[in-house]
Image (tube, rainbow, N blue to C red):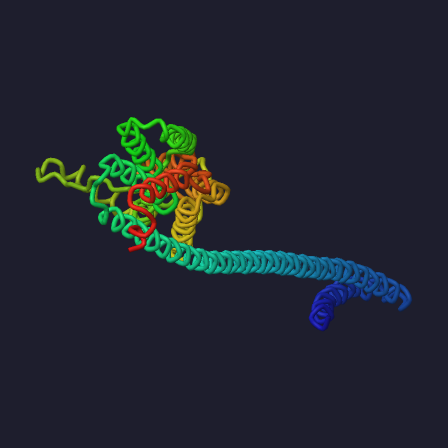
Length: 410
């Protein structure tokens, strides 16, 4: 404002000087003409001063409007900058909020996954405890069966000792005693070893021995032996021991099966350079491509990429498959068809979901499990052989009739 006033004053000074000079010029003629009156001079001087003041006011008005317009432009630019900074700050705050949300959701997912793995570990431990209990029960049953075997063996030895004391007055009775021994051995094969085929063969041999007697009194016993043979033939002939051994062989192959985990595809390319000097451009291009490929690698895929399976998850999947196979093995030995079928179905589900079904070893393993699944391990064994007691009574009667009770007791 001070500069404008100075400028206006500076502009007024020449004009005043010009007015003075202009007014002073006609003074001489007037003076020469006889000096006119002072009122005329005052009027001319007032008009010149009024014109000068009007021009200076117009210039000051124009300069004031320019300075106010410039001030508004500066204010508008400042507001735009403030709005831009506010928008940038809001966008940055939104980005930070979305990132925090993503991180929180990922953390919750990881917590859920850890909880699921812990729950699976707990289930696995419970199943292992149950398996240990089953093993203990199986060991108890084996011990009881071994005691029963020893008892039968002692009885057989006692019977053989009694037969050996006979002096052979009736040679046909040896065939009867041999048939009785074969029937007892057949019962041992059925209840202790679960060997149905051998038991049937022993009963057939016992019937052959009785047929060699040519004695009508043994026909009812031979009829009972035929009934026992027919009963054993109706039993499922599958060998549960063979099934258990097959499952045991498959347990050793679980660690060699390929899991369905992500593998990075190989991107090996030929990087051989030509030794000819004429191929320097091609060699230079090849070197440049190799350098660029090391920095940037872009691959497109249309299928969903599965997450990498950790070492703990791999160990857990293998142990779960082993557990299901071990349960199937125990169920086969104990003739528990429901547990046997359920364990093999669980094993097939694990193989389908956690293992690489395109691998040849996994495919063969799945076929073996399906073959076991189709095997029926149900066996309803008879409580006793109907021919054992009548044959024993017939043998005792023959021995008592031949040698007497006193000779037998001695």
